[in-house]
Every structure is written in structure tokens, then in C-alpha cells.
Image 1 (cartoon, helix red, strand yellow):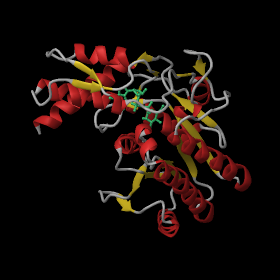
Image 2 (image 1 turned 45 degrees about the vertical axis):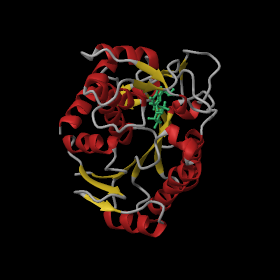
Image 3 (image 1 turned 30 degrees about the horizontal axis):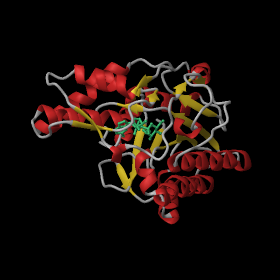
Image 4 (image 1 turned 90 degrees about the vertical axis):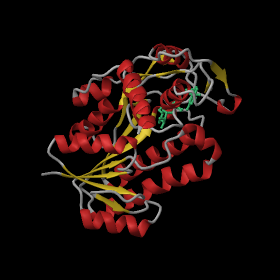
Length: 307
Ligand SMILES: Nc1nc2c(ncn2[C@@H]2O[C@H](COP(=O)(O)OP(=O)(O)O[C@H]3O[C@H](CO)[C@@H](O)[C@H](O)[C@@H]3O)[C@@H](O)[C@H]2O)c(=O)[nH]1
């Protein structure tokens, strides 16, 4: 049985990845700053602690999900974002180099690394030079560059991803779809009289979190070391289109208000994924569409409020 370690295992994606790996015959151990079952409590910013965990677990594969994933927040805490996303990854790679250099690692990066692209709507492939425009994107680009250096110089088995937007039940507020869902539920319950939104012109490529974690497993199993893989559906929707769909899923009339506090200093206008490299190497295809993400997220928030 293969032993997998998930960093950031208590986060939104971590729970789904754990299920995906268990369903496919892996033994799964988590590493997180929060205590949880089947999870070792450790801080990746502490190099000694990180090394001790890797030495003890000696995993066959490692999925590095831990990090500061909120783009809007990265403008408020740029130092912390860089520290967690870059130093955390370096501590992990150093530990792997010293304790289990044959382990297969999947390092999660972001489509935000591409930044503002010249041709709106064009499918973005991994060959396009990233041009990061947010503190978060810079941190993920730096993580990726460090991983490439470690893969080349030490022969570590590392695959990097540029994961496009994803969603599903359990995603916390701070991201567009759960922000819309939680806001709609507040209006439905009479707790708010309107839904406050940010920039509605941006177009994003959304994939269901279940499809994303399947891609992570397939990359660990079939990905080529040192390579970077886009993960996304290849279809974009504007924030306005997503908002309209979600409002139609409500029995209430939702009054919308634009909130200047939700506007960002810089916001990628459009980003659409070319996933042909991932499909070529792993046979991955997205299976669940945007509507399933929206239904799952709204249902999650309605149940939260009931609970
Ligand atoms: N969060 C949020 N975003 C809003 C809102 N209204 C409009 N938006 C717009 O919706 C778009 C998507 O915002 P997010 O859901 O916060 O995602 P992101 O900035 O694209 O970052 C996400 O995707 C990356 C991959 O591209 C991920 O790497 C990152 O971790 C995150 O999940 C942005 O253009 C944002 O300005 C709102 O109320 N809340």
C-alpha cells in the first residue's frame, strides 16, 4: 500500500484529496497546523519540525497543499503569503531531500501565476511565460521556480501544478462562489438586505474540487518529474454570469450592491485553461461542470446556517 502525506490536510481541498486517495488504496497521513484525526500537527515554517515528520512518515508521495490560498488576502498580508507559500515549500523540499529523496511530490501552484495575458479568452498552455500580478501569484511562481531548481539539482521527483479556480461544498468565504452563496443564504434568511459583490467583469475557469483532486492523484502516479501541469476545465464564465446563475437558484429576489472594499488593486481579467498536457500524460478530463459547483456550494451554506 502506498503511503501518501498531504500538507494542509485540514483545508478545503485536503479533505477531498484524502477521500480520493483512500478510495484508490492509499494510506493517508495529514500534516497540518490544526489538530485532526490521522494528522500530524506541525508547522512547515519550522524546518526541524518538518524534517522530523518526513523522517518519521517516510511517505511514498507528498501532496503539498498547505499555503495561503486567498488572492484578496495576499494584498493585506503579502509578507505572510510569501513566507508560508515559499519558505514552507522550501522546508518541505529540504526535508524530502534529506529523508526520502525518492518520494513523488506534487506541489500545488496557481493559474494566477499567468497574470494579465495579452489575448483575452485564449486558452493558456504551460508554455506561456507567467507574468504574476498579485503577491499571491508571485509567491506561487517563486515556489514553482524553487521546485524546478530542487528537481534539477537534486534529482527530486517533483511535479508542479498551475491549478485554475476550483470550488465545491466546504469552501470557506473569501472566494467568489462561497462569498456569493453565503451572501445569498443571508438574504434568504432575512439576515441581510442585499448581497455585496466585487468586480463582476472578471472571467474565470472553474473546476469542481473533486475533479481537481483526481488530477492531483493522477499527476503523482503518471506525471513527469520536473514538469508543470495546468488543471482546469477550458471553459470560462464571468463573475456576473456566475452571480446570475446563483441568484436564479434562489427563491428570493437578491438585491446586489457593489462593494468598493471587495475591489482589488489588480485583478486578472480573464484566464482559461488548456489542459491538453495533463490529458496527454494522465488521461484526465473534467467530469463535473460549473452548475454542480454552484448547487453543491449553495446547499453547503444552506445546511451550515441550519446547523
Ligand atoms: N472573493 C471574491 N471575489 C469576487 C467577489 N465579487 C467578485 N469577485 C471576483 O471574482 C474573481 C474570482 O475571485 P476568487 O474566487 O477570490 O478567485 P481568484 O482570485 O481567481 O483566486 C482563486 O483562484 C486561483 C486560481 O486562479 C487560486 O490559486 C486561488 O487560491 C483562488 O482559489 C475575482 O476577479 C474577484 O475580483 C466576491 O464577493 N468575493
